[in-house]
Image 1 (cartoon, rainbow, N blue to C red):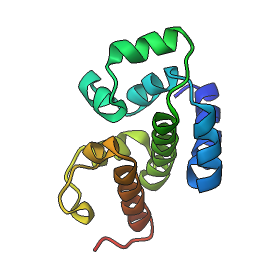
Image 2: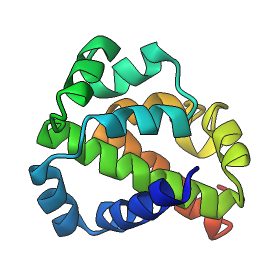
Image 3: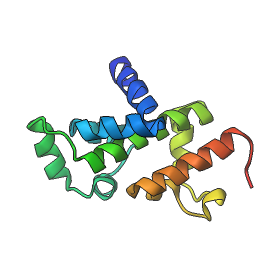
Image 4: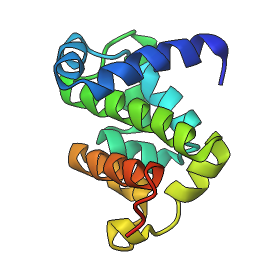
Length: 140
């Protein structure tokens, strides 16, 4: 990940950890181009990106080209996903290991594939909680 993007994501990741800051930042709207950054960082297929944002990649591309922000709900989801990415890399030590974990059924998530849970804000929270349990050695 480029240094400038890493710096921006670090700041946004902190906002994703503080509920009030998250809401305030989401209300401003995250640039639509950030959805493609998320897709690239998570190595998402177009259909996976569309499922997360509930928008076609064509619409996301148009918003991005027109420099439109995402809706507050999509911005909130984006900020939470960025925070999740930062936490996952911290817990697993590298992005590749985190991305492998995301793509396999997780025992602590009742056998669900964590990546599939990123389609809802609550699902993102569940994956974050599972990462926190892994970080603290609670694998039950």
